[in-house]
Image: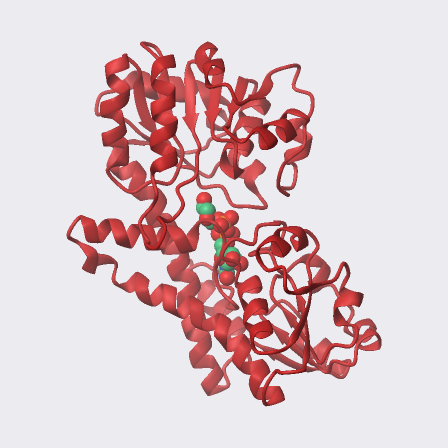
Length: 430
Ligand code: UDX
């Protein structure tokens, strides 16, 4: 099939590459010429495992351009532009989605399918359909559930496909079934529903995941004052199949380009719809999450009775491992709070130093763990990269004068670090 992808940021670049991998003829469009040049040269503008390989030779089936008229050859047009928070508020800013659809209109007609992938407030698809349908084209909402670090495999083998269509629009479903023929043949479940349900599936899934993380972090707060161990507790409740162990890792909480902004935008939309109370609990989810960041800062301050003049080695800056993304990263936020209290922060990360430096240039970035821990008073692990989980504490002890390690992701072996002479402090662990 001939496909265009409008917006080549994180979602769009991955989607375009994966659609070509599925055998389609794809053109990716973006207004950012530098980004398009990188992608056209076969290089990913951000770190994502497996993406560079996919951007390579596709027998000319994957192209990138800044010229929107290049979509005319295609019949299926994915909208994959960002929906950030509006300046000074929590609602989603739809200007890029609106601009993308408006730019498409002169180039589409009968037989074309516009497929929304961006995360949008419920009601957006119905509004956009009013713009698209007069051209003779159809609109379908097909939310994306990919996780950073697994974006390629999540797109090639999604755990479900959701199509939000106009009631009775069988053609939209048939066309998307051809686009996703390969995952469907492998048994991926597909749910065909209305626009509003499809839009809500996405934001409610993210709200649930955020709630699950804040639930376990709330239990960690209780564990901290009772001497209980949150990791054992999570294992034990996780064996209940109704609860499940995944997304019950207590620590410095969730960040990234999706969960924090999506729960806030969902609340803002509910308030607009007159049902704000239904999502009041997400305020607590957000607050519990932010309290965990301050907990690490408090632990450091209490230990040293003030941080002025101290040196803190921060291991991890990305909001999660296998990513160079520092958007709303708990790690970078904590590093910045510690620095604001007068400490020197020697920070390292396997992939995110450059992205972190752009938003927090004042930190002292170090290329390696050895350089980060040299001369430090404390070590704080804030992103659970494999490289950090597998550190040998006996070797680290030789490279540093620090004797305190705070494990903000509960990813280290407390016994091994204590044995190597460190005072080990986890979050929600005795
Ligand atoms: C998320 C959703 O998982 C995905 O379905 C959606 O499409 C986009 O948002 P992503 O932002 O890539 O994906 O990251 P995810 O793996 O969900 O992690 C989000 C944050 O939660 C990270 O900061 C992570 O460290 C944190 N987290 C996750 C925890 O603190 N504890 C956990 O148990 C799991």
